[in-house]
Amino acid sequence: MAIPLIIDTDPGVDDAFAIALAARSPEVELKGLTTVFGNVSLDLTTRNALRLLAYLGRTDVPVVRGAEGPSGAADVHGEDGLGGQAHTLPESDREIFGDDVVGLFRERVTPETVVVAIGPQTNIARALDAGVEFPRLIVMGGGIGVGNTTERAEFNFWADPAAARTVIRKGNPVVVPLNLTHRCIADTEFLAKVDQTLSNFTGTYRAYLENRSENTGIYIHDAVAVAEAIVPGTLRTKTYLLDVDDDGALVEGNHQVEVAEDCDWPALRAFMEQRLSV
Ligand code: BDR
Ligand code: CA
Image (tube, rainbow, N blue to C red; front, side, top):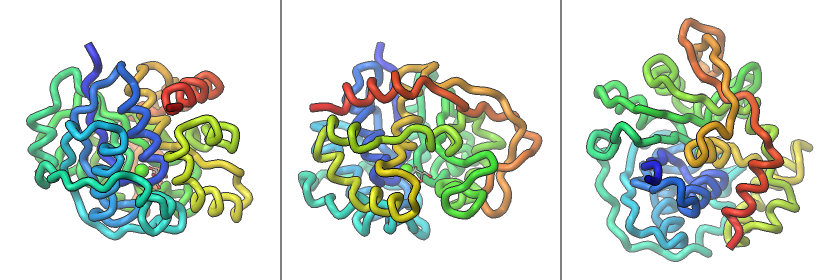
C-alpha cells in the first residue's frame, strides 16, 4: 500500500520540486497540502499550491489554507514565490478545502500517515497544541551551528521560533537541517535534465546564490525531506539533545531529536532526476 502523505508547505521554488517529487512517486499517496506563510504571503503560497497541483494533474488533492504571517524570502524565491514564473502554470479556479488545518490533520492523519513540514512550523505547532498526534513527522528546518537567514538561524525556524520550539519539544520529528541540505545541490546539469517548467522557477534563486558565491545551482532542501517520506531510510539520522532559541536557532537543549545527518547524494540525485523528468 502506498504511504499516505500530507505536505505542509509555503511554495516556494524548492517546495515546488518537493511537491512534484511526491506527486510523481507511486510509493506515496498525496492526501493533502496544507499551506503556510513563509517564502511569500499565504495568499500566494496557497495559489501556488493550487496551480502546482493543476500542473501535476492532481486536482484531487485537497489544499487547506493555513497560518498567515510575515513573509520574507522574495529575494530568493521571487515576488510570486516561483521565480517570476508562476504564470507558466495553469490557473486554478478550484475551491480550497477551507482553512481548518487542525481539522484536516485530525480527519486525515492515520497511523500510517507521514506529514512532511517544509515551511514555517506554525500549522504543525497549532495542531500539536490542539492535541493532534503525528505518527511520523519529517521537518525541513534548522541548522546545527549554521543558518541561512541569520548567522545561526535557518529560514523556516526563524520565521516562527515559538512554533519550531513546540515541534522540537512535542512533535518527535525527524529534522532535516541545513547541514545536510547544503550538500544537496541541484546544479546546472541536474536542472537541465528535469522538467523544464520546474527548472524555469529557479532563475531568481540561482542569481541570489551566485551573488553570494555559494554555488551555480539551488539547494533543494524541501525535496530532500520529502524523499525520506517516499523511501524511508534515504537519510541517515542520529539523535541529538536540542532546543530552539528565541531567534529561531537550533541549539543544544534537553529534547531528544532525530537529525538527518547524511545521505548517498549521488544516488538520491539520480532518483530525483528520474522522478522529476517528464
Ligand atoms: C527553507 O526555507 C525556504 O526558503 C525553503 O523553501 C526551505 O523550506 C530552507 O531554509
Ligand atoms: Ca519551503
